[in-house]
Image (cartoon, rainbow, N blue to C red; front, top):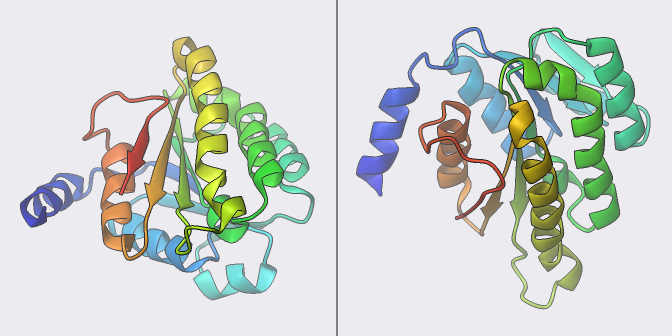
Amino acid sequence: MLDTQTETQRKTRGALQGKRIIILGAACAFGRSMVRALDAEGAQIVAIDSSATGLKKIGVPTSLHLRDAPEVGLRRIGRGWGETRLDAVLNLMPLRHSHEIDLNIATIQGLVQGFMPALSAREGQIITVVARPDQPLDVATGAMAPALVSVQAAYAQALKRDGLSLNLVNVGEGAVAPARTAVMGLLIRAVGPLTGGELRL
């Protein structure tokens, strides 16, 4: 495991130089961690979150406050974005709203509908990170990953020919470092051309 992590980190060194990546839900702890990791690899980061205070603490040059419901706000931002360069979206909303399945499904729909032109132009990707519940009887959180995998699989199949890939990283307790490595691996395509996949850590 350690050898694999070291090798992935070696391959990522500078691999994201100049890539433009949106981090949605950037103000959560994992979001802040990914901002630092992607910044260290030279990526241009656009942080989006519903917390204006959280965005100020991140301190990236480009941040957007999501004032509307996610699906509405993302479509609006996406229309304004147009075909401006965009290589990937890291969707961390399931970490911010772990019990709201409908909101997270709508978020994926908003991302696809809003940013499809920009992402398709660069064979971009949407990577969603979801956490498994610590408590086995936490049914709402436990149902999140299967619901999002199902939605993602439908979009992945439909949009594969358009050059857009969607993948999900399913994180267990204490798997923050492996999750960060998995996200980086997907971003640099070290795990191959993958769409509709679920990486379970």
